[in-house]
Length: 475
Image 1 (cartoon, rainbow, N blue to C red):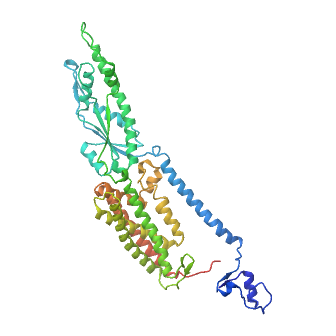
Image 2 (cartoon, rainbow, N blue to C red):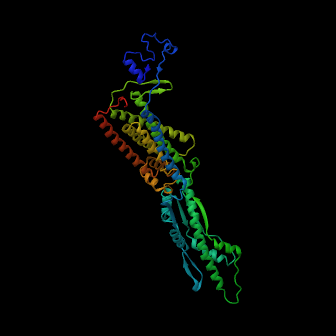
C-alpha cells in the first residue's frame, strides 16, 4: 500500500510512477522494505486548516472541560458551611416545666420553652431549617433520612435547673440538666460534623443566657434572707456551675455497622453503578460499531476494518440497548458479590441488586441514546452529564444543603443524585421508600423513558432522511 502526496498524485496522473525520479524505465524497487512486503508512506502535506483541527481542536475542548471540571469540584468543597442553606435539623422540647419557690414566691417556669424560643430566634433561618417536632416525629425523620440531626430537650429539664439553683444554696448533690445533640451518621460523616458544629454554637449561646438567668435567681434568693439569719454561702464551684448549667451530650442515632465506611459506601457503590453504566455504554457502542464495520478494530499493531453492515441506525441502537440491559444484570450481580466479599453490610441484597440493574439500564440507555444522536460529540456530553456535573451534585460526600444553590438545582435531575438516594436508602435506611428509594426508582424509570423516546425519534428520523452510516470524505 502506498499513500501519495498531492505532488505525487499529479505526477501519476501525468503517467509517472509517483517517485522522485524522472526515469520512467527505472528498475523495480529492490529495497528490503519492498522485499518484505511492507508499506511505504510518503510524508503528508497538511495545510493550516488541518493543523488547526489537529492542534487547536483538542486544546480548546479540553480547556473548556477542565475549566468546568475544576470550577464544579472546587466550588462545592471549598467552604461548605458558607454555602449552607435549608439544612434540616429537628428540635424536640419534651420539657413539662416546674414550680420554683414556696409560698408567695412560687411560680411556674418552663425553661424548655425558653431554650426552644432562643434556638428558633438565634439560628439563621436562611441556613438552618429548624423543625420543632415531637419526639416520635423526630425519630421518624431521623430513621428515614429527612433530617441530619436533632436537638432534644428532656422532660425534666426545668426541674433539674430548679434543683441546680436550690442545690447551690442548700448542701447536696447537683446534676446539670442535659440537652442531647443527636446526629444521623447514616446521612454521611460530613453532615454529622455540620450538625455538631451548629449544635455547639447554638447551645453555647443558650447555655450562657440560661446561666445568666439562673445566677440572677439565686442572687435574688440570697437577698431575701431574713434579718439576723446567717446568709447562705455559695461556693465558687457552684457559681461556675450556675454560669454554665447545661450539659450538652452528643449522641449518634442508629450508629452505622462496621464496614460502612463512615457512611461513604453508599456513595462509592452509586459511583460504581454510574461509571459502569456510562463506561459500559461507551464500550458497547465502540465494540458493536467495530463488528458492524462502522469503525476499525485495533489491538496494538493489528487492525481490521470489517465491511459495513447494511443496518439502520434504529436497529443498531436496539441491539446496543439489549446488550446494555444484559450487562446491567451481570455487572450488578458482580458488584453485589464483591460487596459481600469485602465485608460491606448489605441487609437487603435483592433490593440492592434490582435497583442496581434499574439504575445501570437508565444510565446506559441514556448514554447510548446520546451517542446515537450526537456521535463522537456524545462522548463529551456523557462525560459532562454523568461525571463533571454529576459527582458534585450527588450529595454523597458533602450534603446538598451545604453546596452552592446551583448544585442543589442540578441535584433535582442529575442521574448521580437519584442513584445515590436509592442506594443510600437500601443500605442505611432499611430500603425505606420515604428515605429516597421512591425517588431513585421513579427518576430511573423516567430516564429510561426519555432515552427510549428520544433514541427512537432521532434514529428513525436519521433513517427516514437517508442519513446512513457510511464513510464520507472530509473537505
